[in-house]
Length: 134
Image (cartoon, rainbow, N blue to C red; front, side, top):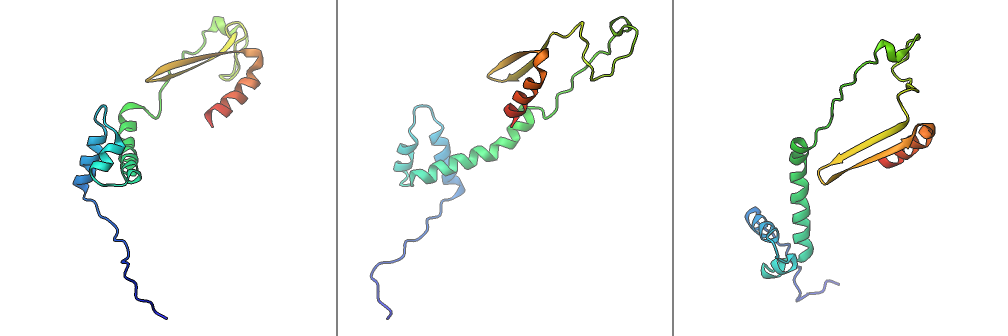
């Protein structure tokens, strides 16, 4: 039952780390086509795209540590006695005389977004924020 086959099984190609780095660097040059670089090295385009994606993922943790802090401390000033009136407010209780809107500001390197929400609709603001942060 065994058949002699004249076709050989394809050999899996191995690419050195130096070649991978050279190809990735060539692809990052301005005006260069990734497909053109892949063809010039006789490498499958999908393989080159995978190398680029893997390199980007390897570089990502280092960028996050230096560019985007995980925690931003905000200094809050306690309300003065005149603002509190005759009774003490809890830290979570809004002061009706000073708050009119909920203001959310999101800053990114590419720009910032500020959202103002009416205080009366705080429940819908909380729902929107939960969905947006998902």
